[in-house]
Image (cartoon, rainbow, N blue to C red):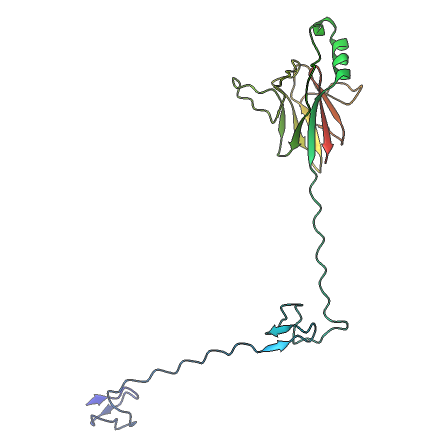
Length: 219
């Protein structure tokens, strides 16, 4: 007796099932594949008149299921661009007035100092978490970001003299790193307390060494 592949009943016949009449031994036909969905028809956007495929208009974004607002679809106003971050620059130069002040303050010890005849300005962008001010020393492994090695060499600048660090909110601060000759900001001010940050304003002049002025500018 053969088992029907359709209903599972045993059948004495060998050609057709006694129970359901299905042909015995014939493969069960595979179900037809569903037809692929038809692509959305092209329609005209009620808001802007552009050709639209689907619910939302690619030109103006109008939802075809919603009524058109008076005056058409409002174009969203782009968010204002974020203001550019502040950028600062340190300008290094030799200053005759500062040189004369150092000579007058140090007396005979400064008699051998000579103001450099040629000292071009150098510019250093203030970027990063800290910028060391000093003189390069391969022997000590010192590579300051603001390198005052020269020429001309300012003998009053320590190998590791000071440091510029970002202020908590914006801007920069200067820290004297317990240098030999100290650091001053502005005219007539005392030496900075070592290892104590001092807030800088746009245009402040940092005085170090025998003639070196570092002026910070907000670009």
